[in-house]
Image (cartoon, rainbow, N blue to C red; front, top):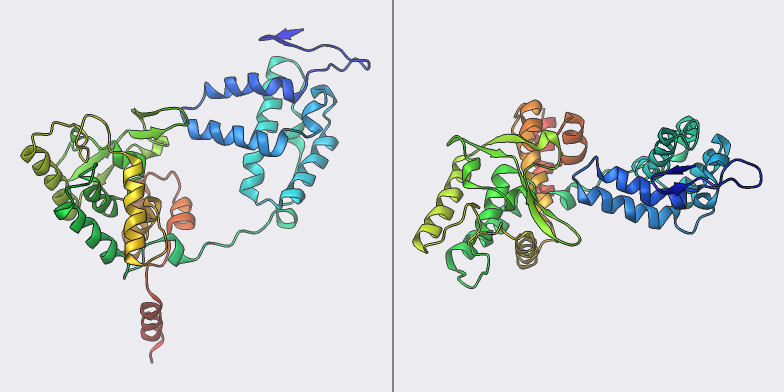
Amino acid sequence: MEYYGLKDTNDKDGRGGLTLEKLYPQWLEHKKLYTTAETYIMRIECDWKKYYVGTDIIKKPLKSLTKLKLDEWAHKMIKDYNMTKNQYYNSTVIMRQALEYAADLGIITENPFSSVRIDGKRMFRKVKKKADDTQVFLSNEIPRIQGQAWNDFMTNDKLKHRLAPLAILFQFQTGVRIGELCACCEEDIEDENYIHIQRMYRYGSHESEVVEHTKTSCGDRKILLTDQAKKYIRLAREYKAEHGIVSNYIFSVNNRPLSNRSVAYLYNKYCRDAGIGHKTSHKARKTYISALIDGKVNINTVREMVGHADERTTYNNYCFDRSTEDEKKALIENALAP
């Protein structure tokens, strides 16, 4: 029996010899048809090498994989790698979906992995939320980072990506992802008060490109432009006009999108020069979200503007305290004062 070039040859017990090792490449090509996220496929390939390659389970005939065998495999993997719930879910996407694919092809009658159950409270490693001061720019760090970015824009004519400092300042005012930031275009400003986030600069292992969609369907959104955000757009336009630069990308000085590496380099440089721990552009996004929540902006508005499908994602992964230790103490003292 053949499926897209895969032969399900019979072994001695008549259950078939097709293995996960042989099915995986075909399943991966099938998987690629249903996603535009290259980073997701790259993660799957990394998980395959880390959790599957060299193991006995991928060499066993698919028809011999019973619920019990898969249950034991799953529990052993959780223990061996001390997995969190998310790590387990991500790593078993291959087994779960490849067996579902095999069932769809008629290679096996049903997916036995769908019956495997894990007692999360007993098995998964608990994840402690990361310390606030490592996840956002604190109130006394933001002026230092933004001050350096402003000074760079005003005085540093040696910068290859001359408008990158303005882009960083703009990100603190909008919370856009770095890929979205690099791909912001003039036509995205459909209204003077809003910018339409509808594309991103995608960085692949082989090539980079601008794609006409965001990370998720919820990522296509409109963000309110603050007065400061409008100022940075105006300054970028004025700089390009003064230097005869024609570019549809707001913060680029050529016909290519702004380089993500140039933005990442400046965040690293500014943090180092400011004497604070290295923090990325993603931490600026978290800072923006935390600031909106601190400012009592309705959570549904925050969720929509940052492109989250569920407010639990916003609260659980992007809400951090930006206060310094002295500010925390003062707030607590004030709250508990008689």
